Length: 132
Image 1 (tube, rainbow, N blue to C red):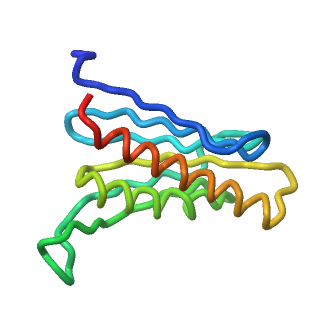
Image 2: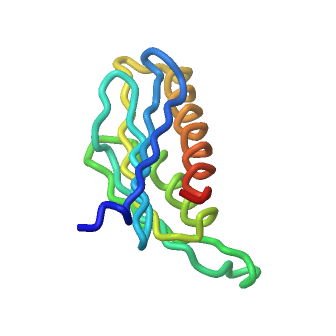
């Protein structure tokens, strides 16, 4: 394996029990993103985002996404939009693994985790899009 062809980027958003650690492994053929956090990071869903021409405007990039959630988890609600956005903005194939968990989470906890995941993804996309 030629390690020089692989680049890893890592960012953190949020604090305490709402922290989200986001990593991207950038390969010549695509990007692997992990959005993990809360009190029990885990594998809750996997989403594959594929860039494609927009159906409304073929000059613009859109994306199609396939999702596989782990039974009983709702992490697909983070993985799907993250894969769609990253594939569209990076114009590359993207895999997202998401696993965010806070024990006895209320609506505010969930919203904060989702917000932190979004902030982490924004920063990852910025960093991945920059030259190495």
